[in-house]
Image: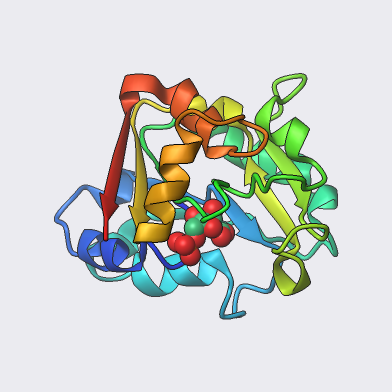
Length: 198
Ligand code: 6PG
């Protein structure tokens, strides 16, 4: 399961050239902005353009975006599609925003509690980040919850930039609700590799 945003782009291109048994690989999203898959901000578009090419084009892709007007209407169908691949995930690629979010777990967003501390074993949640700096086109999101992410067999948190380095340092000891990435860091423990570069 891979994150979107700008951080993984170079890694996707390098990974796509690896000679793996790609036909045995299922790739899904950690989260998605609720925009059409041809929108420049679509995480699906980023994966299709940068990762599902060359040898990696043989991999199976599990989109999150549906034709539903909002993510809440698609949680059940996407959870059913993702569930067979989550117990446990082989590997999850996480990013982090300068505010300490990961996935679509934005501090103060609607749906954050269910995403970070899912009830009834929910594996997918809908997020409305309209009351955060993420508002606008990307306010409506779908995200994996902490259950599948924290139970992954392996995880990578890929972070670039000095501003994020200080946010990471704060997140390592801060309140999970203020720095949601800490929920993943604590939950994954030694299964997580944090990779940072300037
Ligand atoms: C998204 C991502 C998100 C991302 C961080 C970092 O949809 O935005 O999944 O969790 O990993 O926001 O984004 P950048 O890599 O663009 O800094």
